[in-house]
Amino acid sequence: MTDHLNVSDIVANVCAQHTEAVFGLMGNGNAFFTANLTARGLPYISARHEAGTVAMADAYYRASGKVAVATVTYGAGFTNSLTALTEAAKARIPMVVVVGEAPTSGPRPWDIDQLMVAQGLGILTLTVAADNALRVSEEAWLLARRERCPVILSIPYDISSEIAGPQEPARQQQHAARATANLELVEDVAALLNRSKRPLIMAGNGAVISGAGEDLVKLGDKIGALFATSVMARNYLNTPWDLGIAGGFARTAPLHIMRSADLVLVAGASLNAFQTRYGSLFAEDAEVIQIDELDAPTNPRVTCFIQADATLVAKSLTAAVTPVNDGWRILHPEVVTPSFSHEQPADEFAGDGRLNPRAVAQQLDSLLPTDRTIVQDGGHFCGWIPMYCQAPDPRGLMMIGTAFQSIGLGIPAAVGAAVARPDRTTVLVAGDGGALMALADLESAIRAIPSGVMVVFNDAAYGAEVHQYAARGLDDTAMQIPEVDFSAIGLAMGAKGVKMRSFADLQVLKQWLAAGAEGLFVLDVAITQSEVADYMRESMAPILAAQAFAGQ
Picture 1: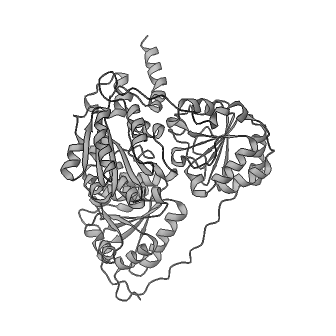
Picture 2: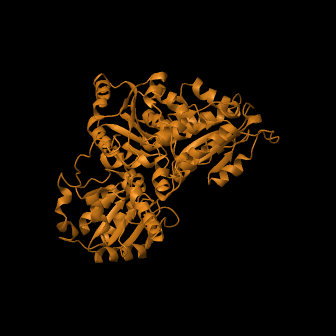
């Protein structure tokens, strides 16, 4: 019965049937909706900035595979959420974002055209009315899951508390058929695989979602291929022939092998700049075959594109290819040895006396609990942890911000990851620039994370800009940040922590871990500005070389 329910109640009832968590910040536009959810006891985690609500819901999905709700009010609440919304859209993260909207009678002086703004971001908005709130709310959930995207569910302010009355029935949800491949294309790709002498199979997050891992391994075993993954699919492929993360976070020995492949079969990976190491991952003459459910290839290096479900294509290719008895693997027996890609411990200090971030990452890998969820903000520092710290599975390491090239979403994202996996230690990794940007939700992290470590790689600068632009001769005044002690800020808010200037300072963290690791520990690491991440060094090499040549 809906006779006594208002419009916000109808929307809340549908959301409560589809999710186990809501991340929000209450305002006039979503007060009735939010109150319905909190009154019924649905887990509700309040952010302190609207961008945090969406970042929390984003990380909740990445850590659990479950879709969450984010909710903000209209106007400034909505605009504050836009960076996190765009990141979720570009990363293809399903969520339902319930927002307040201008009244149906027309905009007030403080209202904006939210529909137009969302369209500019490539995000669909569904607006409810008094008689269709049930149907439209169900459609939002269907679209979010089916299309793997955020969907905005908008409630006009003047009907948010209006009695809903009889509702249009919800449409029968149809399960979307898995995209099947063109058989001729499959045969063509099988022929390419049969001709290949050095095939590499690269799996991405799309392969994880499709469940294609086992079938990709079977295909690779049949043709003697080696494997690699995107950072989002790390440790997904159950095979000793996995070279590890491809692209900017690859280690030296595996990277050389990847670059010698004459054919790369890419399943469900976006082939963005990081994954392709700024275009240098593939040999110039390598065939690059991409399998994805998107409408078109995502990188100009793709020579053959199959729009289809990765699992179905892998099965079809396995049936079509000719078995190889020896092949490429014989040339690289070292891949299956424990020492493969092992690197010597880095020096503790750089030349300026500050800590070497590579060495810090190596120390953290051995020190932090192995059952962990690593949440990385965006920034130059993100090159260290994926290279030197292990994650238990693909959902144990997430990169928040890289899809939109943003920083400042890591702190609230850690909250969403911790709510999704409270059984794991949440390890938040941020730079000082991004951490300062998101300080409002440090309180949220201290309040909501049952066991977590916040690692701030603090170089007292916007490191990416220093290495991209100061290195080219630009004045670096605006790139520098007066050094902040984030451990002191954390202590003031109720966390534990320490300012780390040497490995000896890790003793405080060790004691906290030994005592039960309850709450949040803030480790502010004073790192050098002189150490450049591998992925950035390679991206800048052509520019610096051209600049040096021009100066001759």
